[in-house]
Image (cartoon, rainbow, N blue to C red; front, side, top):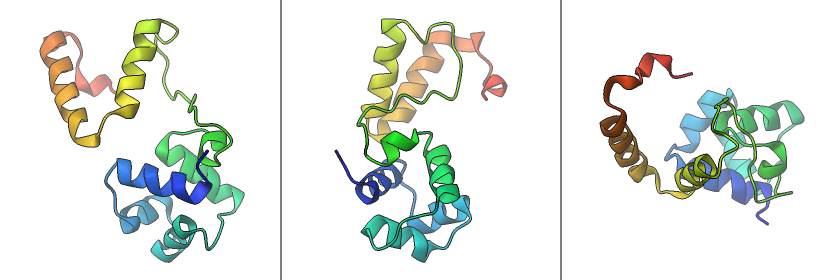
Length: 120
């Protein structure tokens, strides 16, 4: 399993944010974030929670206690179906550039059935 610093760097790079961008969102210094990613320092519990919430991951996943991220921040009547789990698995493992392609395909399939203002 990945260590915290490796997991943090991987999560940041997956969304293509710079250290400065993530640090600003977390309201910490970019030096602190750099130190966390290099394994030179560890965040306090409040900062760990902010990081987990920002990346929408569980603390266990963030800390490397599991490679399975089971945190869902939304509710869906389909979330316990195999089809839903397959879609989430694909989205979680696809490269960031392909997410816009996936979004475009979904919009083309559903058309005007789903309005974007309903997004949480």
